[in-house]
Image 1: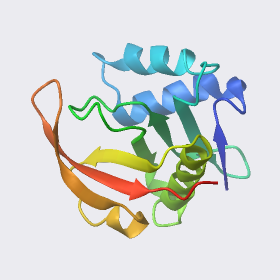
Image 2: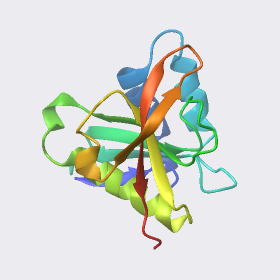
Image 3: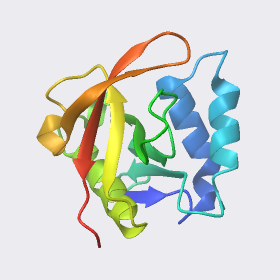
Length: 154
């Protein structure tokens, strides 16, 4: 199993779009993922970045993103881990830890001091070094718990 970024291998674009649409998409927002991923292949700065965890045979086990803001009211915080998902056959095998480790390394290498995420999960992210920061609000009226993780500079 290894983690690859879209920037490292732009040939993964169509596969990434399919994965993220299948995990988080709907008929109303499928274009969002296609557009976002397409325009993140060669950005000017360190963000956004998108990742897939791939098996030795090239099967997608999971994925996530590293983005400036995750549709949440705390626009003063960045960057954000987003869209972390692991396909059911690969859960409980360390795939999410691999993905988070890659995001942490890339965010630290880009000079960020902290990494943030919004979620309604508890315990899962604490086991990966995140701590609760406070509440944040989404444009459609939802509310999420915000977590942060300090980054050691690479």
